[in-house]
Image (tube, rainbow over all chains, first blue to last red; front, side):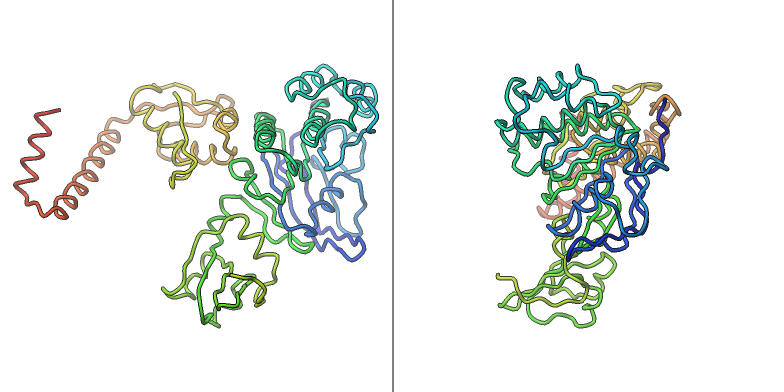
Length: 296
Length: 124
């Protein structure tokens, strides 16, 4: 069956989910088909919970998640169309790498064992080793080979690059770009190393305390936000429009503003284009807060 | 056509891509009817995001240098000679402005400039 291509690979509508003290609140966001979307935010912002909900690994309390138009996350056919790289591998440590196809391949409708072995060779993952004996980098590459071996349309990677060296991170980015040559392919990539998204992600979703703080084109984020830095008096009129204002003990302050709010500030401040990190750091604070916890 | 990108340049990536393709078109390396690389292939080759190349290609369409042919891709259009001449003339204007401000900064007068322009003209 030829899979249909929908505008959004994933559509998340008003999703709420409570897990202990943490809660996803009213998350409403789409992952567009044909693009790489980065999912960023500090630890505990809700990235992994959202990823698990998309994969159908947890149920949500309210709202809905649809994949490929009208598919439920837990639907076996949906799972067949998704390749997943999580922080832990879904295989037993005593299994040998080369035997994975016989074991895990059965779970997928279209596991391609030849492709799997090609990928193992390309990533230089030793086939005869037991999974438990692989390095962190080799484990990620094995996960990636498993994810790609059943020809998915959507590739979901949750913090794949933590523990990877620069060479392996670059290889990972290259594999993602190669995957994206097919226009109906989609990638969702969660990371807390935001610089990894530069020149890789098209869209970005910034999570903060269980909510979506920003969703849109990555380049637009840099154009829409600015970082303003000053010393001494902070213009009170600017406080409501300043996100996550931080002061240090010497009286210097730094905050995130929308580009149109630069009019509140005079020539005594420095205004820079915001990096993805700036946005993540400051959006983690509520608007109008005045924290005095940074050192110079 | 080889595109080389600088990752430390202050010029955005899409702008660098656009400029280099524009040069290839105006210089005849990409003649009328030539197909630009598929934007997804180019993004993977250049190690940039799909949206970056899309932006460069859309700008080239807006500049009427290429057109997006459905099912085929981005195709180089015939060079509009008037437009090409205007673009070249605009380059002369920019260079002239730079020449004059540099000469003023060096406290030269108009005769110094004339002499220098004549020397350069005869030399090239």
